[in-house]
Image 1 (cartoon, rainbow, N blue to C red):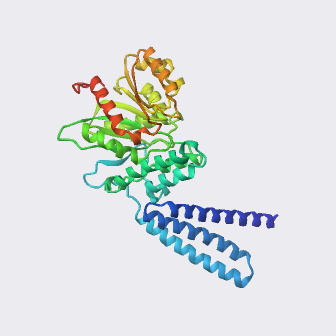
Image 2: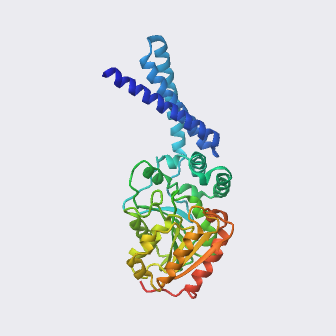
Image 3: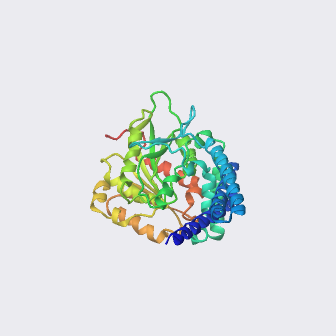
Length: 392
């Protein structure tokens, strides 16, 4: 029995070591940044150290001792490299004059040592696209290459912005959910273009999709926020499964961030969801106090028909306004499904406008941000022409 246990432990360690070396090699091959290359080297050294130490303990004296000592040396090297990377990880503290920051509520705090804060987000996204391209047909071949080019272009521009770096990454919450943890509210990204003395800007609360709360979203939103004087608040909720417990609370927590700042107008807030974020829009839009949101915006939505079809949603939004922006070539949520949903909203006495962007797919937020923003701005203005405040 003891022999079988030792044998199983040895096999598990060898497999872990082999997995670490494989992941390190993939990261080394795909890395955009020198920091990730150093981390990949640390991962491979650590994995090889584990294997050498295990075999050193199980091998005859001479060879075993040499393997054991070499494994320890590799482990020390891995620790030194990992410590170097940890010293370069973001602080979570915005620099002076920052427009972009991580905000926390409900007792949540910045996780300085999270792997998502050790590996620059550009590399997490690039590696993630490659690892998923084999199992996800929507990321295979030319589609995956196109998405990668769109994302990398955004992140390369972002690299020169120190406030986007110090804010850290929220993708660790995505990974936690993938490993079985339930998503929890407590974090949001905030982009604020700055305000004059006594000025209070309108805001959009933006709910991310199933790939997590990417900083790339806010780099895209930055142009709209700067041009039209809007704050953008994006709560984080794991992998974007907003229908899970805590999803509505994450959105309401973003409203608390709005309320605690004197440069954002809590009476002029719109709720927007991308992809699965649409599920959070319909749920939080129902749960929030009447008049809290001036309108609902859905971009490439994966609408929850049970939610928008509920009496509670219809009662909350009868006489209200909604904007749906969708790509004609969207394969994840075909336009033939979205059009009847828009018509259903109109039949529920909701002023729902459907804007279709020709030739675009589910990732139009990255490929056609101008087309999106030139539809959002006049739609918001038509329902808020003078900036007149709604009663709280």
